[in-house]
Length: 289
Image (cartoon, rainbow, N blue to C red; front, side, top):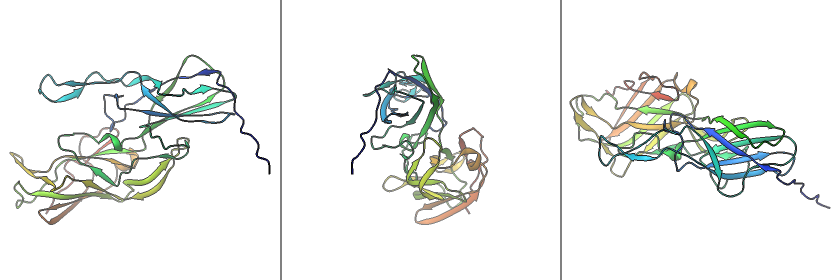
């Protein structure tokens, strides 16, 4: 049986691409140097698949003028153009759709099945007051490009299928005074909170994979210590990424379970802290008995 040759067309001109990155969990500084973008273009010819780009400008880390030795991001860069690392996305023939996602991953060959980060177990790092970057994800698209233009093609705001959750210290019983070790932390709910071995369709936003209603915090060996302050015993703040949209995540009950010095404590509550779009705040939600 004869195999028909694959039809392709030459690129008539390359696209100049830009986008805005200001999702809550990635950070209000916008684009950073470590961000890498994957780009796909579909047209009448063979698809241009998973082309690698980087932001041309980005917010940089600067030493805090108030706390020597601590570095914070300087002026935010929410919108920027992208620079191709290798092959550039271009106009061929017919109508084009352009898709982008961040962070780039080499193994993604199909824009309808881009790998998402595993959220079932998320690492805790001391003195890091944000979601770890490896758990963030965002995507965008430009539809119906029918003719080539040298003008900038704007993706607009990248959106995320995820929501950040902030877990301040629960209220502890009087028997916990500080110095105890937390060796296990699990957050659970009535909705799916995490995904594993999952992919997203950049066209539809549909997620496929193993979903779970809980997330375990990956603690350092030996656990983390409960500290004593003028407010009483306090656990560190945990920041996690949920595999849920914000509108759903901010309305449901959550259960926090901690193992402290070998004993398990658990409490259930609703978000009640300062409400910010993209962040579910569980301040005051949990009281251990």
